[in-house]
Amino acid sequence: MNEYIGLKIFSIVALFLAIAGMPFYAFYQLLRWGLCGILIFLAYSRYKIKDEVDIWVILTGIFVIVFNPIMPFFFGRELWMLFDIATIGYLFVLLRIDHKNI
Image (cartoon, rainbow, N blue to C red; front, side):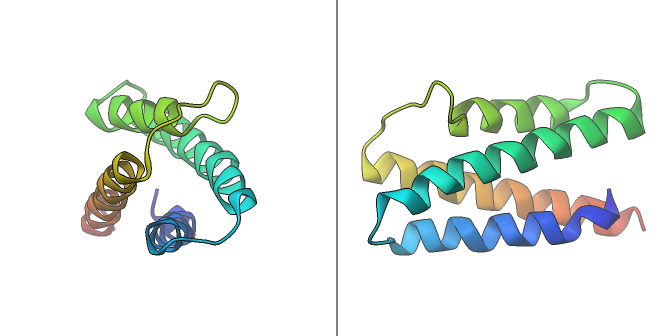
């Protein structure tokens, strides 16, 4: 999973931009599509490496559901900020875990 550090950092930066507030709605739509795709890829990659569904795959799946662009949730800005912060924290934890496994 170490080779996917760039995807995690890109996602963290995009989420920080979302928290900062972007002036156009298209950014948030692109964020949903991009983040959902990256999270699906990370969950699948972790599953293939570990060959089991562990807590990290389940948590990633929960974030995929929250950020899914097909059937989106329409939360207020404050709640989205909480989800963004939680996702940033989660991605930092994944970075830390993957860094230990080098």
